[in-house]
Length: 435
Ligand code: PMP
View (cartoon, helix red, strand yellow):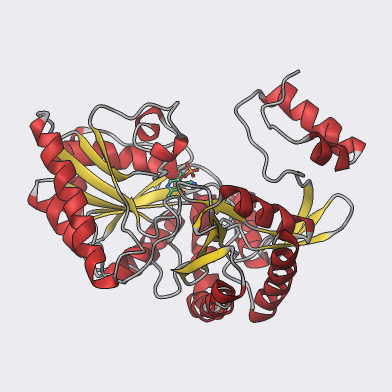
């Protein structure tokens, strides 16, 4: 059988027989669309806090998984889920206290304009719903996204997720723009990005397409992690509104405290979006997502189209979401993300002078991007060697960006300074090996 995952034979041979058998079974039963992480994939059986344990009982430091943001197996979230699951789990067509309390808690974390919530199960569904709402509200169809964005898997959303690659067609109403360029002088970044949005608006109009929305992941994860300077989204947001479109902040990655300055990435930029899509860490692994909206944006949509999502916003989901918010607040995880993230970035920046492979270090809070270069150029091969070298030292990260050369360091928000030291030790040893 041809393997969808192209492991080198050496990597494959280094796996145990049991792991080799699991890979073959996966390919047989899951088909060819799935990809595993790492040249030598890992088989985890348990997680606790920032640690994942493989089948042999070995611990791995998780510096990658943002879903379990309040920690793998968080006892507060588990207790909330199991208590509610044992009591009642229905859906949003009955009255239930949890969904109201949770929606009120969520909107309380936002500027007052963002006062209504709709629930889905995945970030893709949230973005799919955002498109329908944007099109109803604006009467337009055009969508502007960054050139290596990822927004999800539904057929509509895949059409504006260019990072899925050249085999996944973009919609005819979709225009891609360059993301903010972190290598420009900081004062030029905002205007340059706004010019990209304006050019896309002009191009849509020239083709008779009315703009419906500009959607950005406010930390530009798959475009290579771009957070600075704070405020750079302002002119772009003004431009889309000027053209009759709305601004959708995809907070699936930066939301729930990751950027270390506030609960939401858009707040870093001093803008109030028209719609905010949320997901991933929302239930710490319980599948839940949704959107937060300005009421005037969803008014027509809601009047004209009934909305029901069987699992979205059910009482267990609402209990999980509320527990996550409570833990973030009680354990001051936004401040932790800020402090530990700043420490990690400072320490990592030392390698710009120390290693020819490290070009720059970016990010906000516990979302860090490290440019890997070789001969001054982006190097996906060197990035892959670092990612796999860390994996061999039992530390988990990944790489992203259009050249797949940006190390993506995005641990659970409970990552402590001691965990950061442990990460840096492995990073140092890996770089020495890779050079
Ligand atoms: N938006 C962004 C920015 C994402 O990173 C993702 C998931 N990686 C999604 C949307 C889609 O979320 P889901 O996988 O829950 O559908």
